[in-house]
Image (cartoon, rainbow, N blue to C red; front, side, top):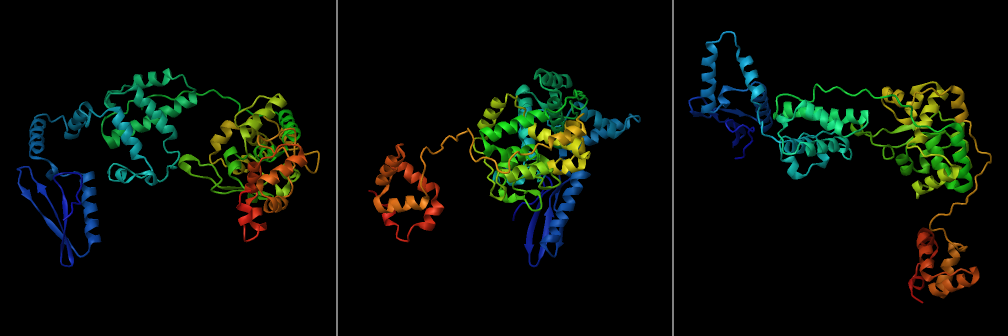
Length: 482
């Protein structure tokens, strides 16, 4: 006989399998202390479960006098006797006054409340078996598993550290304001942290019931100052592209996708060349490619209506044989900006695309669909600046001066081979005939640069797919040591 009751100790439901029927009995202790066990039977377990849910909801919403202990029932009767002599005081007014000055669970500390709150909003997919056994947990599927505590968790951990050892109900409004002001943060960050704390304290009032008043409710948000987004000028973009072509042509595909298509860095790194449809002139940002947008989830999108500059640059960089090289991306980008003599701006490429794109198309709907902005307010707040339409046209009129970009510039990858390797099939043939060490000596004599047998093995491993297609079925000679 398992216990399937509510969390109230005086009202428990027990299932009893009796023949083909399910009987539920629940314990009632009235104000005299007498125990009764009313029951009700059902033809199926499902019907019984529905009845249990109805009873639980009724108890949670309305309560019942039978759920009071003998001591609580006695206190309630005494309170009614006192109120009878004061006709001007209602029972609800008296209860409100009492709870305001004597909140439930008043001793709950900030550390405990923050921990329970983060667990409460934890996505079900991240909950352990032990987490799922705790009843207050609510599985918020709308929170992205990787980001559900990113901002909120940081804000509340800072709040917890500042008020360590204090009860939630003891934290005053001015103390919260002083805590936020002492951090010396930007207005937008201040408002975000204040919002996180407000929601947390609302939860403490409504769910945790460890305080009766949200002490952050009356705190006003700071008015942020308008600041234009950091974008590159048309001349700066032109200079960056010129340096990239001369110094690192392999950088161009990334630069074009970020500058002229507005794709995020993380999305470019996850993209495949097959996501670019050169015939239809569109780019597919698949769900596995798109950036997670917090509570809104991932936003896949099809990027269309891109200027001709995108397709001419991608064609010059290789077309269908394009290679999106993002290795050592940050170091290469730093070197290019140093050579161009231009100050780097965080997210400057994407911001430039959105700002000049809005001026070019004269429509936020087109640009928001391309960039993946759901909310118009965010777009207008960050990108709708005083850039002229002529500047937008000039921005997207930066075209390649050649049909095909050079394969190699002055930039040398960190592990660029120093010898002119022969075709892979020739290396395989040499290894099968004379072994790794003799092959290494052969290439050392021919190229004038020392080649080790280890480098020969690495070369073959790099082209493993080619080796597997070309080596004979009996590969004992290739794997032997000479």
